[in-house]
Length: 118
Image (cartoon, rainbow, N blue to C red; front, side, top):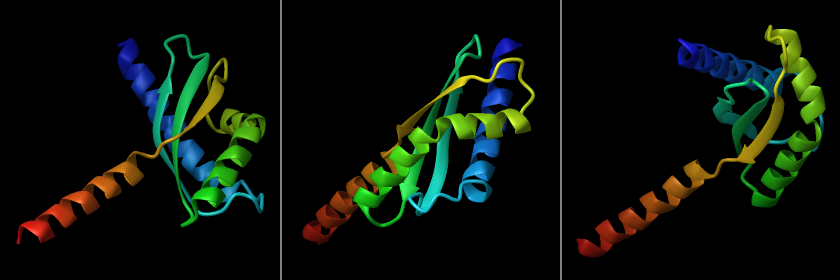
């Protein structure tokens, strides 16, 4: 039962964060498409790991966007508290998720091997 509740909370946080990134952050340093790839809240609801993929076409800009989001975590946490009814709003811990980028590189390598094999 508890696991189902945690999964539901993770899902709610993920949806709400996506909306916050799309509609509430107006900082000019935040550029590109921000995707919330995963949310993992601890059993005691005190901490929440959040994976972000950022696509701006420029790795340096992606890092600036990520750093800005991390520095805005207090604002994001308050915006999240307005949307989700939890007794205690967890501390947010953002992580840059580059799994999409890694899978693209692997696909390119496989494509190159396929072309060499022909």
